[in-house]
Structure formats: C-alpha cells, structure tokens
Amino acid sequence: MALRSVRCAVCLGACILILTGCTTTTRSVNESPRDPQAQRTTSSTPSAPRQRNTSRTSPVQALTAAQMDTLSQADVDSLLVRERTSSTQVAQIFGRPHSTTRSGDELYWNYTHQFRDERRRVGGLKSLTILFDRAGRVLDYDFQDNTFDLP
Image 1 (cartoon, rainbow, N blue to C red):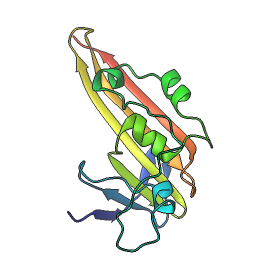
Image 2 (cartoon, rainbow, N blue to C red; image 1 turned 120 degrees about the vertical axis):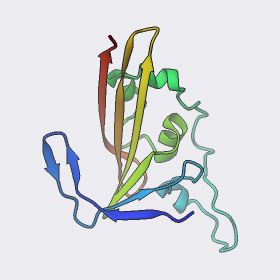
Image 3 (cartoon, one colour; image 1 turned 30 degrees about the vertical axis):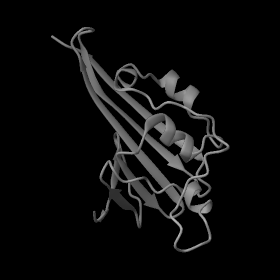
C-alpha cells in the first residue's frame, strides 16, 4: 500500500504553528510505524527484514479501548517520561500511531480515541501527540481529554 504524504500546517488549540518542511504520513493500521530506534537496530545485511530490538524493554500490554475511555492526564504522565521513554515502549503501550508527522529531526506520533459509554453516561474524544527526538526518545507530549456527559 502506498503511503500518502502531504505538506501541512498544524493547528494546536488557538495557536497556529507552521512546521516548515513538515510531512504527514498516513498508513494502514496493518503497517508498522517507522520507529527511529528500530531503524538503528536493523541488520546490516540488505536482504534481511527489519526487526526491532525489544530485549531491553519490559513486556507491556497495549491499553484496551475501555482503558483508553478512562485515560487521564495523570495516567499519561506516569506512562511517558520525557527523555527516557522510547518509541518502542510507546508503541507497546498505545499501539501503532494513527498518523505520524516528521519535521527535520523531529517525529510526531498522533493518537485519537473516540468513545461513548452508555453505562457511565459519558462520551468524548481523547487525543495524544508525542514528539520524539532523533534517538527515538520522548521529548514532549500533549494530551487532550474532551469528555462530556451524555443526555
């Protein structure tokens, strides 16, 4: 499947940040994200498939949809540690990103989760944008929780 890339301007809340030379890539959910760490740990044999080196990471289960429904800023703060959490660990926790954006050496992963919980009578949209450095470590992140009561 071909990747679709577009030049973009990103709007963050009321502030507009124009990322020069920014490329947004949207991929099928069946494709793996391009992990800067994984690219550094691939075999030097050109014909060998790329494999992630996950031996240094602890096994973590990806969050379920129900867990995403109740995810809070405190949860995200405990899961993501700036300059320590790797992109491999993020993928283990949150799964594949819904979209990625590259601007120079910076890589952004974007996640969105829409939900409606009739039992708790709430619904909403949660959004997480994670910025990685060239080494594949979390530099910063932004979590938005738009939860509302259902009528």
